[in-house]
Image 1: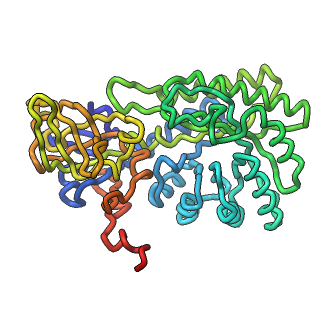
Image 2: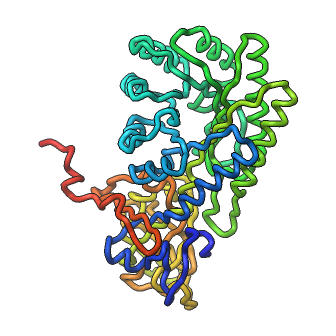
Image 3: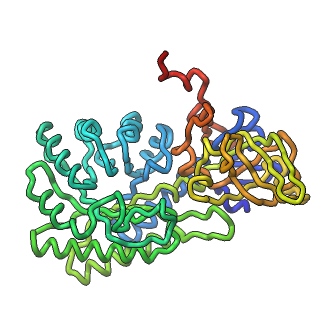
Length: 431
């Protein structure tokens, strides 16, 4: 079980310790729900990605997918680690700007960028805007002309590949809101090439998220490179960059092991090099966009046990002080988690319980049927692998307050987001 937790995790005196910090003491100091990020794990994942791809394919760039979770402290960390950023909104772009992130390494994705977002991106010097559809192509043409710039663009394609993941996490199928289907790709490419507003740098695809099977990546690369070679012959298109997206799965539960970053890098780079050689293409710059596989395993959620309800012969509910408002994933698409009791890690007197959230939805269940040490109100439950898509999709449901976040390292905890206050909750409201 502990292998699901950040790399610095230890057990000391029956207590969970992360980054040298006792989880129970963190819960006492900052309150719960509380999200912990382990700095060593974050930096280690960044380095593993950089080295894993650079050793196999030197002309490569790793850009972090901010949708998994971003705030200024993490943006600064990724800047220090030499990663770029994949943003999908003006808000994520503003976070990058707040830490003076180099805009040459920021890629702007998204299927419905507004005029204001495009104007902001061009004004702040974003070098790569990923064009997702015909409407955006026309709108960006107008905005670039008004700004008097020749904007670098990447064409997003939908290669029609099934990534064998949850339907809500599939993004590269033909029936998708993202990208140009291959049947429309040539028309989009020639439109970009013919406009004086654009420098068409390359193509992009993203097939989905939480992907265990690496073969769909290989299939998508081959489809997209076949298209690039054909466009080179017909229209003189030169592929300078290829972005293969992200989406590598992580191990949320002990029975679902995910591929390693090294295996992922080998599958991508070997396929790319082999296919380029077969087509006579000069290998392009390779860009990949991991999110979950960098931050997911670095984050741990802490909750305090409250009400305990046993229905004889049916189920025992253990309610905690968080739930659907800070982690919607179990309710949204049946995500599975493991957990331990942070103040009773090694206790062996186990019982089967269901960990329920405190919010007014019957579907507010964090973990159904898990064996944990006998619980009492005040115990601290720790859920690993909560660094991705929990906080970024958090809400104020039931007028709850979004939780604080601490970054831990060498026995010290640094608050990188305070808990919201009731004043924060009503700050934008007007009577």
